[in-house]
Image (cartoon, rainbow, N blue to C red; front, side, top):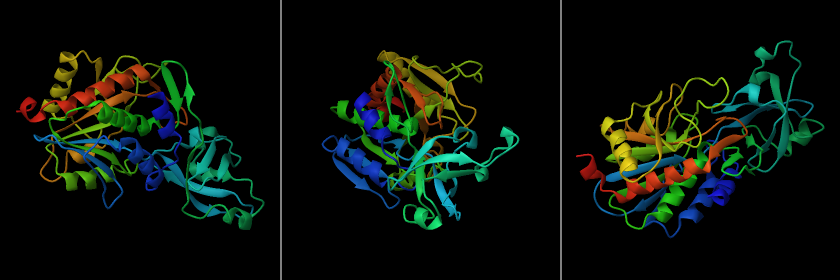
Length: 332
C-alpha cells in the first residue's frame, strides 16, 4: 500500500486535468474487473459483475490546485484557486504545472498577514520577463503542490492524499475481492474538488441502487483542534453526516454491522464542514441511498496530508466486504 499511495500521490492532476492519473489507475486495475470504460466527463468506471444490487463505489482522482490567470511584464504568474486552496498555506511552497514546469509561490508586501489573499500571491518560475514565462506557461495552465512522499513508519505524508488514498483503497479492495455478490461500479471520479461534478454525471449514467464514497475526513486529535470524535489509528470512519449528505440510516447501519461482524476497526464520523461524492450521488435521479467510508487524515488541503496505514487497511477490508456481501439482502 505504501508503494501504491506513493505512486498515486506523485501525479499532478488538479480538477479538470485528470488524464495522467486516470491512465495510472487504469493500469493498476486491469485484470481485476470485467469492464473498464471512461465516460464523457472523464470518470474511470471499472465494473465487476456479480448480480444483485447495483453498487457505485466512488473515489475522486482530482486534487486541489492553482490556475494561471495572468503573467506580468516581469514574468510573475498570477493565479486563482482550483478547489479549496487557502492563501495562508501557499507562501514559499513549490508548485508544479501539469506540463512539468516548477515554480515557487511568493507574495507582495503586506502589513497584516491576516489580509493575505490569493491576489497578493504570485508564482515565480524563474523567468526574466513575460515573453520568457509565456514560453513555459500559458493562461489556464494548472499547477499543484510539489511535495514528495515520506514514510514515517505506520503513518505516511504526501500531497493529494485527498483523495489518492481513497483511490488506493478502492484499487486494493478490487484486487482482494475474489467474488462480487453485487454489480459493482468502481468509479474514479473527476472534478470532485470543484463541486462533485464527476460523481453527479457518473451516477446519472450508472443509476445505482446504493452509493458509497471513499474519501478522507478531518480529525480532532491534534493540539487545540476543533472537537471531532475521529482520530488517526482508530480505524476507518463511517460517516453519519457532513455538509453535503446525511448518510442513509440503512446504509450507515449496514456498514457498521459489516464492520462489527467481521472485526473491522471503525469509528463514527460527523463532519461539520465539507462533503464527498456521495453528496451528489444521493440526489441522482429519484434518489440513491448513500453513505461514506472515510480515511482519517490530518492537515487536509495542505501540502503535507497525513494518514495512518492501519486506518487505510481497515478501510480496504470494509470496502472489500461491501463488494462481496449481498447488499440487496442486507438493506431489505
